[in-house]
Each structure stands twice: as C-alpha cells, then as structure tokens.
Image (tube, rainbow, N blue to C red; front, side, top):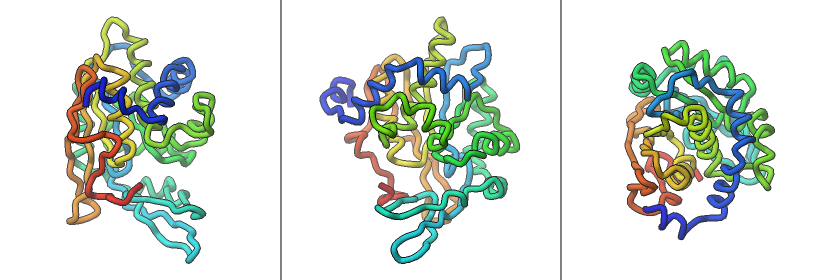
Length: 269
C-alpha cells in the first residue's frame, strides 16, 4: 500500500494523528522527560511493547460484569460497556514474578549491543510502571533509552493538550508516541538521520495504527513491523512473526493495514 493509496483512504483518526504529530513541542517536552538518547547517533531505533512481547505475562485481570466478577486473559483482554476492570492486579509483586520470553529478550540484548536505540511503549497504566519495568529489564540484561506507559496518568495528562478529544486516537496512541520519539531523535542528531525503525508488538490495534501512520509520516525511513503471536501449545509459547516492511512510504502488506488481524486474539477488539 503506497503513500498515495494511504492518502486516498485516510480515516478521521489518521488525520487527527497527523495533526497531533505536527504539535512537536508538546510531544518533545513530554518524551524528553522519559528518554536518555545518549550522545552518539544510531542508525536504527527499536520499539518494544512489554507484556507478551518481552515479558511472558500470564496475569489475569478481574472484571466486574453484570453477572459478577470474572477473570480475563491479559493477552486478549476486552471490555464491554459498563464493565469495570481491576488493573491493580498488575502490581509490582506480579511484575517481579513475571518471567521473560527468552527469545525476545535475547533479540533486545543483541540490538542494544550493536548500538541501536531501544524504547519501551507499554499499555500499562499503573503508577509504579515507570520504575518497576526498568528494574525488570535491568534484571534481564536490557538497557533502554526510554519508556512510556501509554495509559498512565502522567502520559494522559502530559499529552492531553495534543488532542481535541479527551483521549488520543485509540489505534494510534502508541504510534504517536513512537513518531514523537523518531522526531526527537532526528532533531537531536540532524547530521545522522535514522535509517531504520523496528516495532515489536503483540496487540493488533497498535500495529494497525503504526502501519498506517509511520510510513506516511516518515517516507525516508525503512520500517519493520513484527507481531508476537501466542501459539496454541501453551500461554508461555510465543512466535515472532514479521508482518510488514515499509520503505519510501510504501508498506508491503497484503490488504489494508487498518484491518490487520492476527489469529491469536481474533476477537480482541
């Protein structure tokens, strides 16, 4: 799907995301607080989700429904109207007990060792996340250049001035954070622009937003998108799946990225 094709099928959410991205000062100010880009430019920036991507999270989330409280899989989590989730289940103690996905942690270590910039964009929103995830990563031998908890109060408040609505566009929330980081890196190292960006994620709607927005916003950068699929064998078994590349603003993906869906959580949205 080319940039021209994307322009032809822009959704209102994509248009709003592009408008938000133009407000660089607000994005930069927020992201600089949560980044350490170092002093040397890097050719590649790599963005990881956390749960079910680096961490083998098997926690269930209690949800109050009209029929009582039920436990829902955090991997394929969903909410119906009127339901109340208890995300406090994602506690510091729970995170400390969570093991790594060894193959993905190994990839992160290798990328960091070759000098790539590494960032975490997690959907977690608990206040402890800013400290406990870096500690978990350090324990597992991963050094990062930045972390944003997309649903944390600090993020919601910090980025609220960007959106006409009270929330950032749903599919594009992580994509906008990634785009802001890309622009921040480019502004710090203008003589050595990024050549490549990789994004590792297990949640379809975040991949949909990233595949629509990022190649359109940065046609001079090569993008590589990876879906981490949970197989049928066990909740602890994951398979890294390359799903799309993009260069010169052209996304190599069969079909419309706005409708991308993986087989492990077919009803997640």
